Image 1 (cartoon, helix red, strand yellow):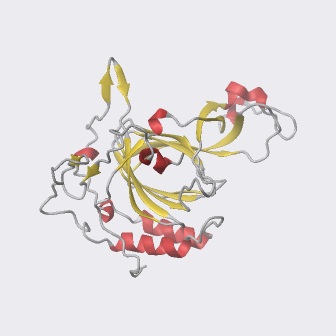
Image 2: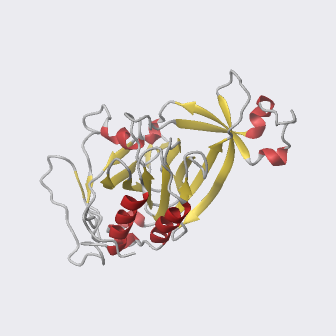
Amino acid sequence: MTIEAVAEARSDPIARQVKRVGYAGQRVVERRRGCKKKVKRSSSPPHGSSKSVTLQNLFQSCKDVFKGPGTIPLPPDVDRLCHILDNMQPEDVGLSSKLQFFNPNNNNALVVQGTVNRPRVKYTTIYKCTNFSLCIFFLPAGSVIPLHNHPGMTVFSKLLLGEVHIKSYDLVGCQPASSSKLRLASLVADKVYQAPCDTSVLYPTTGGNIHQFVAVTPCAMLDVLGPPYSMEDGRDCSYYRDFPYQDFSRNWEGEEGMLMTEEEGRGYGWLEEVEMPEDSQMDGIEYLGPQVVENGTCFC
């Protein structure tokens, strides 16, 4: 099941109630379906809350760059999108670091019978079509988006606010036939990123196509997916569990039949495909930031 569909197709009728978060002002006020409480907004919203030239440029450039399923953006087009995303500010999508959610001391984890329940990730969709989608993921401190892949997709990720640990892998292409469910993967990234930082890009088979996020502090991540997930088109999301290379080093022999040394093995890991983890479930929320205009003009 795709990441977005996780929130939309949950069986719990109470959990299906979408939380709407008014994040464009200074406060975050949640409401559940059927509740008469209105979303309160600041009398002085941050700059760009009604329109955003940068967001409009990103949208228009995505329309130009993404040509549909089965295609990968050319290097000049990748540079074009990265340039826009690198210069994006939280205010361009109606966010502010002054929101209580982004307070590093804000602890959203719940302690139940001595155990800590990870807080749930929320997401909102700015725009979605057949060729691409623009989404924001809100990760409370301690929350996790587990290891998952992006089949046939090119993904641009821009950390707008907060601090997050990212681990990513690429499957090693040529692997000997084996009855084992483990697949060897090269480690692309395993580090903590703090906003502001450069945009990361992953491709269908390179750049860290399989990755996970662990929020060190509350953070917001803007993702551009081209094309977006689609179960009907065979772009469903798969989840993985990883193991250190040395745990199953005998499962792999190099091109010359030699095992990797311990030092060489640190750049690799074993991935096992698993069922959708419980902590992969998310809540969809309404997007209340600046809107994109489909027939607008790019000011690149």
